[in-house]
Length: 77
Image 1 (cartoon, rainbow, N blue to C red):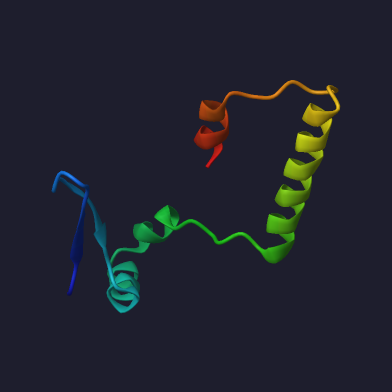
Image 2: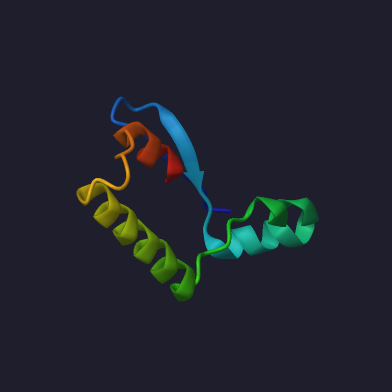
């Protein structure tokens, strides 16, 4: 297994990169690992979310809706 440790700007380890082939082997061996995978959004989901965001921005510009703090927006990511 060829794991790569990811470090922050201070050199502190913050994560691990697992190559896909190794991940597939781990999932075969440990079935519960699959529950931790995050599904990629579909093109339709991305378009719907972008459309909603644009509508929200227009509502803020028109004064129909109050802007949210940046911290709230970043927490959604």
